[in-house]
Image (cartoon, rainbow, N blue to C red; front, top):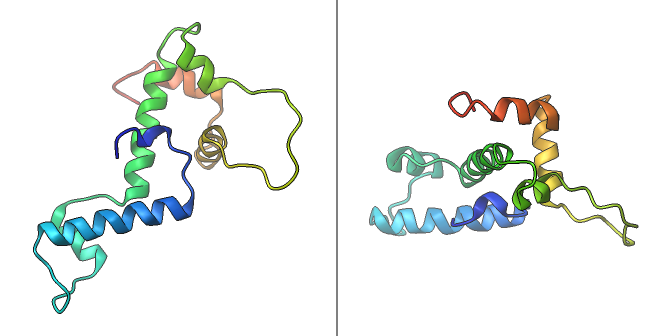
Length: 124
C-alpha cells in the first residue's frame, strides 16, 4: 500500500484493497476453498489491521509529518491550500482534503489545533 496516505479513498477502493489483502493472506496461510475461516479470524491470526484503519493510521502519520515542516514548504502549502474556484455541476468529488476534514470533525479538531499538536512528535 505504497503511498496510501495520499489516496482519495472511497468505500469501493477500500473494499477492493481489503479483498486483495485477504486473498493474499489466505494464500500465505495456505487456506483453500473447502477450508474457510472468517475474515476476523484471518486478521487475528496474521496480526493485521483492516485496510481502512491502516490507511487512516498512515494518513495521520503523514499529516503530522507535513504539519511539522516549515510554512513555506510546498507539501505543507498543498495540504492546507483551499482553492477559490467555481464548482462544476454535479456531485462534488471526495478529495483528500475533504477526507481529512471529515476525520478532523469526528475528532473535534481544526487546522490550528492540529498544527499545535503535531509539533509534539512523541504525542502525535
